Image (cartoon, rainbow, N blue to C red; front, side, top):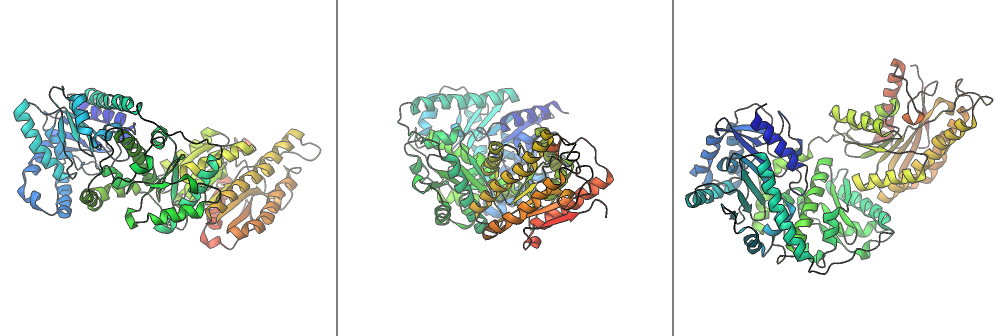
Length: 639
């Protein structure tokens, strides 16, 4: 690999791993090569953290990129057709066959030094988005040699590159070199250096210098104390339930919700004027792209038991079509983000965390200065940003289950893995839960490697523990917002007859098959009831629930309890549109769960019945099975 390319990949992945420097698909990098005639540059909308050989960058002709900035015809075109033409010409500048298109700021990179790192650092943007930011920048960096370049806000893309070309030409005429540090108002930072280490260190030095000044100013201000967190999780559950329901209605599709109380969020909530700070216009282009607007503010007075309706009304009051805010700040509690796809909700969360930190900094330097209405409107119509949103949202399924959330318990076993992968193939986002964390991760990795439309989230859980089951559902709520389907594949068959079965095996079976079933169904039903949108619970039993099993004669009657539980619980849950069913599998209890410490490999029969089981689960969870509840279906081992 070309050392220049290696340098860019290393620099990109290092910067991309820090959400305080870049968020979602923001920021970009470049390194020139072949005597500075060619340049590696990040591909538009891709993640810096995920760049690797052959992915996430393009190789372009430097002179051809620069020449675009002198094209009078381009400069006089209307914005929408111009940006489409710029994107087309940038692809013509490529001299490789990699996927993707060059960053929209490629021509700007061509103007600067050998190695360029462009970031959107939250703390740096605190000054670039502050009323008194420029004077503080002068205090901190006024003695730089060569001096820094400060550029007032310009619409990103081609207009910014044209403006920078003029500014850099004037800078070179005065100082004989290009600027090493360039501040873009309400946008971010460019660091230009001879190598990736120097560019990274320059970026971090600017960040640390501003952060130190901010902390000095912040220490002189009063802060709000956060309320005690005694009922915090109960409130989070209510808010997530309300957001999932309301945003699903707005967008007419399933929705994911994430919650954060990370340091930038807590710091913002401690600002004495936190609610007032959110009245500013959006601060940066990325915020418009991934979050749409400033977040909705939720007062503590509506954070009470049964507050779902109040949350829905708050969201409706902020509704603005495609520009409806994707984030909500609950006073004293934390930040919530909602979106239909995992990539979109992650991007909204990362961008808004950085935005809240930017607001906290700006509040110490004269308050925030948002983008103009015209600048925001430009971003909303910018073809490049629509392209970036499309990349972030890519990968969703299209079936009836697509976008919904399932938790598959004992997903590390044979049966559970087949079920989890089938649900992900249907487009569901699957929480892969297992008592063995490595097996949960293996199933999640299999889903990822199969490039299925649904995303997988591995979690460890011991279903025999009430505390662990509660933590499982709390994790689900804070990371994806709620639940639409529970599939419980956990079994622990006690071997032998009545005369032979050890009491320890018997008690273990009771804990796993009965108590675990109860704990999972109870917490899943509570979650679904809060959401008000129904759901499905499916318990995977063994053949002992309908007939005696020779190898597990003592355990067989115990397994029948799961079928009876489904029948009884279905009557209680009907009123909430929650369905609960069982599936009985095979002639003998297959070692289908790592909770049962299965070690045998798949036989052909086991694989076949596992695939049939997965298909049956998908059927029961789908709208086609909406009238089936309180039933136990029997799958024979041999067809």
